[in-house]
Image 1: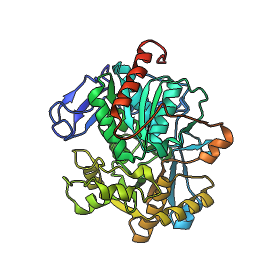
Image 2: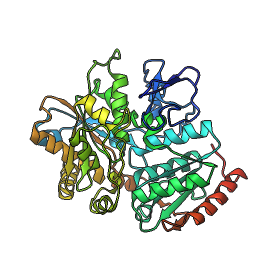
Image 3: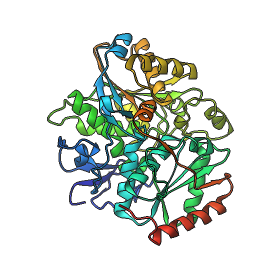
Image 4: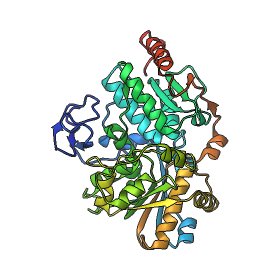
Length: 436
């Protein structure tokens, strides 16, 4: 990569300068995360008005200047006053042009979609496949439409009905599989089985993908750039926990640079009760906590408002995962009820004047809990990450078009999916879809 960065295993320290789109250490496999160490300090490109302001710390060559993707960050007045906080900053990763937030997919997952699609198209001819319960799938569809990079998305049928993008052209290289009567974990299993039978596809890699984490770290880089400091506290709702790990890694890279004091950024992570595997794991303080995936967890997943937070096996125990992140930052976790989310959503929208998604409302509810418990002080600098919002705003400025599923199948109909995906891949190879 022309000396821009090297890749280091967080468990064994194995270092390589050759990025071949690998997700796992050749020694440790899934026991530790790979980490990018950049050769130069970050120099913000102030002439850029999108995410490429921070390309010095992004593991890609390509640049798509027509993308507008970037979060907004501003200091709150009304919500801050209501909570008795003096330095509450809101990081808005959605669509709110008045606050310089231009994520047309409506969530911070847009960053990871750009990252993983850019990296995979630079380094392989295979087509990326991923599972999603909502925002990741929608963002991947939108960015694939914008960039012309092929992708395969598997999502629950209930989620697919909510996939609307600002791109009218449906003749795009995105193969969307709608899985009937399914939850997120069913989609994960389905993708795993497809990967065993289709050598021409490649799994996105989840938390193990360095591009996913580095691009999800962009909002923190942007916030720190605007705040002129690393915040004392960082609040986010979590499902897999990848975004929280990315935020932690970004803060570590910033800490000690010329413009930033060397200090930890304390993580405060929210989940939607009764589905709270990360909270149970952290309360046990066991680094090798074993998550129970089964009927009970699926039943709990169906009871929550925020379905995108229902990852049954979060990125917890591997070296560099959530246990390490929470331990290093003396972090806290918060379980919030559905009614707390509804109330927090109403409060935020009334005071700040923008609509937000349920995960973001869960984050607001967690901040309310933290204030009551004394986990934050009035004078602390606090960054509240609204990871998705602005849909009503988006509809006011843009026309939305539904993205229809390419295939709707049951959870056991792997053979049908294999056949249809193979035809899709043949069309790509025959030049029907061209990568930009």
